[in-house]
Image 1 (cartoon, helix red, strand yellow):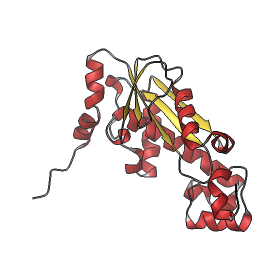
Image 2 (cartoon, helix red, strand yellow):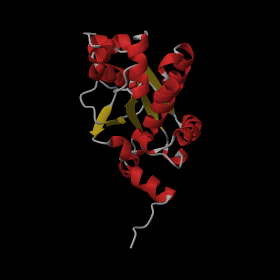
Image 3 (spheres, rainbow, N blue to C red):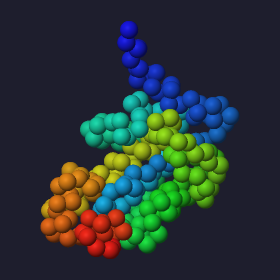
Image 4 (cartoon, rainbow, N blue to C red):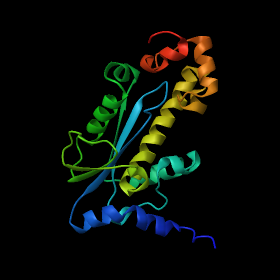
Length: 211
């Protein structure tokens, strides 16, 4: 017998288990997530989002589990509901200079720097310099509502930026691949060479030379 399908209300209840425990203790909670660690081009983008319990938006999940259309539908609802929602972009120059992990950490710290609450939930990354207590969760975007909300905000923000870049550099297909190393993108990279949005530290082997 097939298992019972999870309803939106069930999902909301499951994803807010940790948050509800913290709210019951009087904490103001935010989540941080990133998008763009793996692409060959474009920035890494992080988001820090805090939504009060009374204004939770139904349908939040790990952004990777949602369609682009659904993320776009949720984005304005989340931004309207949020008490705090900040993003940070760090571009290829910074990524090449300090590496993608350190760039991600710096971006996370930057977007959370002004958060006025007292607990931040983070997807996997530990040891950040944050303005309050933090808890790191493995696969946090699938376990925490706030991290899931942050993942959606970061993903939509970055995708929109990559679509804008597509108009400037149409040969790479950024609107479709969002900077990731698809066959189309790699073929264009070999044909046209890199643009200023490419991460030199990521593409050296593809081009057969050191970045």
